[in-house]
Length: 591
Ligand code: OXT
Ligand code: ADP
Ligand code: MG
Image (cartoon, rainbow, N blue to C red):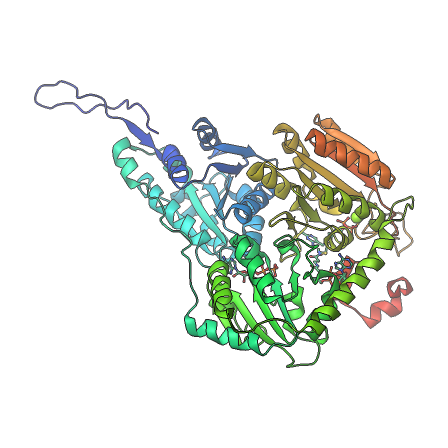
């Protein structure tokens, strides 16, 4: 993109003007650099100094999705990164807008998702002398600890290389968040268009394949050969890698049971006969060889040790990860395979040929029997018709909807709403479940739903605790404005974990964990032209969700859930600190 130049070069000798040279500017070089690298969407909140950057990007054919709050725009960008393997772009104003986006940048880095936060910033000279500029803040220094890399762009001629660096930093090796600081003045800098075009850089092979060394593969195969009770754990790094066919081949050729972490659900269908999700405790405790594929042995897996993992030292781990430093982070890794999931899994498949690798039938039967028993127990609970609904009744409906319409993307957050939906709603396709990720962060829901709809065009159902929704609920206006096929289902139990908490002082203020009872969130959606429904029975819920999916209209279903049905912190209540003093002081705390 070029601008018609107003400046003209004058021929000193004759006084005649040369043909006017075409010019460009910082705004358009940023847009051209992104487009050159196949990035066509920006998640944004406008304001000084980037308002016009958004307008011009839209004018130049980019999709610019404007949000009501930068944190949600940032979550959307990070989820776009997870879904597409290209860095999602979030664009914000300076200081407060930047800080609002920073949580999402840090969350992206924690989740290993590629994202670039581009924030406008104030006058360098004034900021550096702390002279009190409009929205003054040293954003670059503040961003550094929260991301993989942080850069500042000082001149228009550096835009091409800076955006190339940002893209490569975000997607190469372990993906993560990158901060790009854009002083407002730089955007208005004008330069010769042809010279500007030469400064643009197309990033070649930004996330180069990394094949594991043959001896590392041989070591892993030797460990597999000795396995009597093997297990494959699939993580969201495996989902991110998009080597879906190879992963399926590894699982099916080895015959090993597999346990999907929450966002790896669907890499193989949850209904696959080798899926061990419903026998989680058993496989973690009893497996003797565990192959980790793009999953970390962090808190979600009890760090690979302790009671959950059975007797100490009873396991050998093979770990596939792009990041060598992940190895031995919590326990000894017997066979590290450093590389991308696709290359490592392919190498394992090749190495397995003719090595007689298959799990003992007895182990498979044991896992299968446990999973079947758990599923049977669960099935009975899903049938109930209690009013008010409990989580099982409502999720029984959603389970059926997802079985019938497996192309729908599930977004999920909350505590009980999250934990129960994870185990009840089966996912059939890769990257069709997006949730709170490694930090268990609340508020990701609306940004994730918007990104999923924008990036895939598919129907999205966001199953939200009422508290979780409150962190990002204003974005229902964004959903309506862009007319996205998003159906938000709020599990409204009047509070955080439960809606029946009491104020232990006996005073008039409500308990710390409860909300206004029977709040009409459905009216929020109606306020912006979407469809709202307040449902109290499984049948009403089923009808409302099916209507939303058929119409593809923005819909919010406010599902009344029994305030007494949930548990403190869902499945992770054990992480709450305990105090014998407090328990003695408050008898209620002992419940
Ligand atoms: O094998 P066993 O027998 O053990 O059984 C297991 C499986 O085998 C079995 N299972 C099945 N059975 C039958 N059929 C099927 N299909 C099946 N599948 C599995 O079920 C059990 C359990 O299986 P699961 O779930 O796989 O295993 P488990 O043990 O739970 O796994 C452990 C974990 C750790 C991997 C898992 O629990 C997990 O992934 N947990 C994630 C938890 C998480 O991240 N929670 C969110 C954070 S909680 C808290 O921090 C909240 N806050 C604070 C806050 C946050 N987070 N963020 C910010 C920015 N500010 C504040 C807040 C405010 S939650 C929250 C709001 C909550 O209120 P809401 O209103 O939103 O929500 P409600 O609670 O609904 O009110
Ligand atoms: P989960 O929460 O599902 O267990 P984590 O986020 O803890 O997953 O782990 C993801 C892991 O995947 C990270 O250690 C990251 O380095 C790794 N990873 C990300 N992308 C790739 C890739 N393309 N190939 C190999 N490993 C990857
Ligand atoms: Mg709730």
